[in-house]
Image (cartoon, rainbow, N blue to C red; front, side):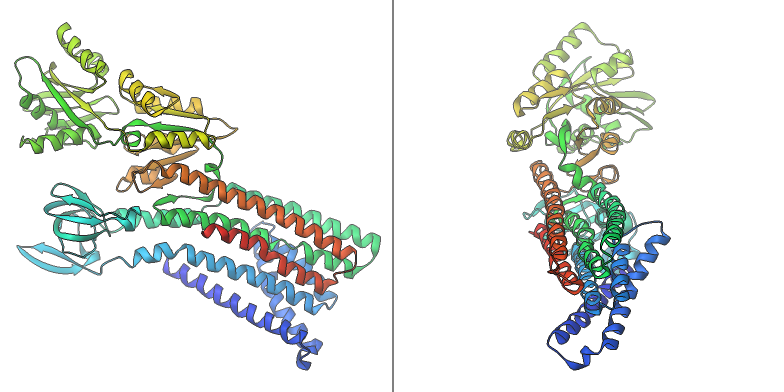
Length: 617
């Protein structure tokens, strides 16, 4: 939260608390017969001054072409002042000030996650310059600088480890409590902590580009975004105000009793619903953020409660995304080393998981990684590069067939045998001739079958898998984890088309991916969920919900949170309706006069608000 906005909310909270103290003190002293407050002039001044802030708020809303609950409160207060019901006006102002103090408090509390993260920022950073280690301000660190992190220090930038090994605590970003081993060649993230060892890393992202800063921006965005149900409350408020004013006018026509009308207006003030609804959404979003799942807005939180179909991307989502080379099959008098050596040349320019697997395996085998002279990637199909004026192509069998790469019948037979074993197969061509293929395997995530079963128990009717892998690999995984339907051999554009087939106006469809090659679908979907998105810019930008941990079991938990928030909002509406009806009955029975109606409204308003605060648990 920006510092000036933070100050404004704190000032607003303090002013509302001061107003509550003055108004509550006035009522207390009045009820106990303090003679000074029996003077009507004193009560009138306090009532009018307190009412001015409500009038101002109502006028501002009207200027913005909005009909707010403050308009109804203003009418009730105006009627109270006209009838010289000073105590009733003080009661209703106390209710409004208390409700506003509550919402300010929750805003501050909901931003405590940001404030606690901001405290992690180191002011000084050690960098290596000219063979010497010097300290510079954090804002002076540039991309490419060599940054030194000692035991117990926070990592100030996103970067690549050039030297050293350490256990890194990532709980500030992911919520996971167990430190992770990081060694040379691994990437580390800003504002995580070195708990053992030391590192020298090359800065890749600094300032606003770091994962840490993007997460802060996400949390701020999530708290600013209104939910449809909140908008529905706003729409409801317009009709409710019109209905209340019309109803009060009709009652006056029949009864000619201004006191009765004022009492009805004081009972009907609905500030509790106006406060309790966003309060419920805000508390649920804050709870999720503290546990490593950032929901970008209340509309997505509400949408979680209505999910009936979930579509999963396979690689990196249902599987570990950590592919392992099972075997290399060379052709045309090439050996395994030569096939891999050529495959890593285009892979060095790609972020695809298969490319990372080739690079890591080549490093393990001490195979040199040469830079290509030119590079081109064909989304979901393959990639090509020039090296020593010869073209290297790696990719799927279908891609090779489209390019008319020369392949013998025996080579095709060997490729299909590997596919029948349900391996992920990547072909390698050099100078437009197939020279071999690499068979890979990808492990499933732990407890994934249990997660699918839990989703079905929660009422998710369809679970679908989309993958670029071949039919046999897709079928094996679908059967193993209990997925209803799958679609294989898909390109990124195909995934968009399949998503559209499952989208439905009657209920919400969620897409779960890792944000690498499924960012377009995440952006299009009703609810795009990026799993393990920490460090992935595309996922952070495209997804509606960003899960910082690679933990699929968080999805059922998120759905439960969404349903809990929606349940509390519905309970609040029911409670508000019952309390209002009871208040109207008491007014018509002449049990409540305007002062009593205001007191009743004040006390009953806190029931929905406290009900929303339950979500903090």
